Image 1: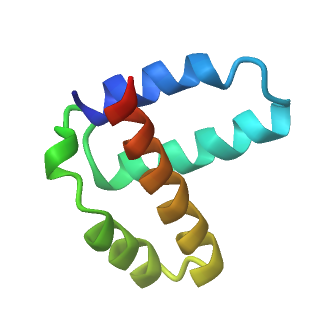
Image 2 (image 1 turned 90 degrees about the vertical axis):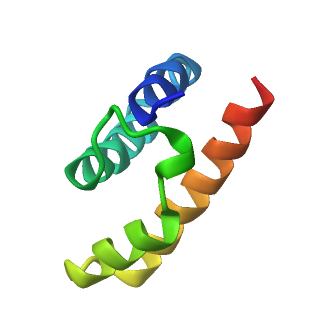
Image 3 (image 1 turned 30 degrees about the vertical axis):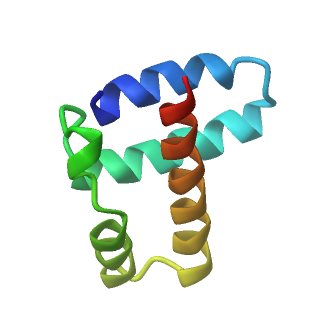
Amino acid sequence: MTLGELVDRYRLELQDETVSVRKSWEEMFRYTFRHYSQDTELNRFDLGMFADRLLSSDMNPQIVEGYMKRWRDLLAWAKSV
């Protein structure tokens, strides 16, 4: 599975969420796709490197940690479906 496929599947899960929750996820997806292609295989998606890239772009460390937690949870969800 690729990052793009995972995001597309998860967007279906977000349909019943509030607009603000969906916007927050979409923002995270946009940041991700600035650093990784949608065609990136999940086993090549390096969260540590991604976190380093976000931190080096002066993103708030608390936001970066929140994104990393979301991605860890999302990757675990992908293994269960």
